[in-house]
Length: 161
Image (cartoon, rainbow, N blue to C red; front, side, top):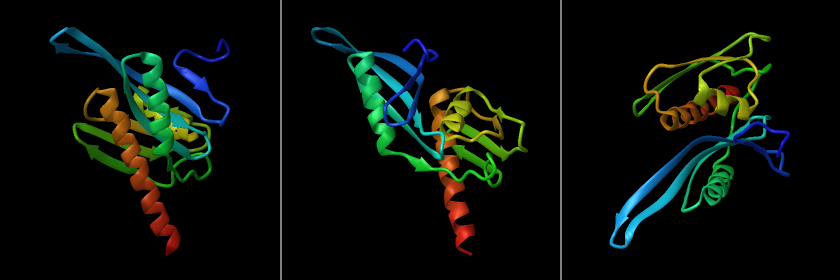
């Protein structure tokens, strides 16, 4: 694993996995504190498929494995045209407000941390985005996924016409 950056892994199934957030949670019980971990993972093939999963387990490595399997079960397909998205999307999901705009070729990924991870895992090369609501990374990741779902639904409707 020396070839990859911290938090990034490659599996044999051509999916890139990225750890977004690791939370240590504890629960008071009769016998003492019960410690667990929750890990938010983004999985993508850089060809238009991306998924997000939240794995919870008493150990970080088990939580990562669970997060990856949940993300792979919930993959969505994103329309990519000339390395970018077809049109602008504004979304509000909970406290998170996300704006995704197509960008010209060569401009790269202009996005904050949470949005950047999701967009690069999907394989979008040129995009401009802005996080307008909360700074909570988990909320922003889920809002970005929701924006990409709406984008693909709208694109399918336009393609059918």
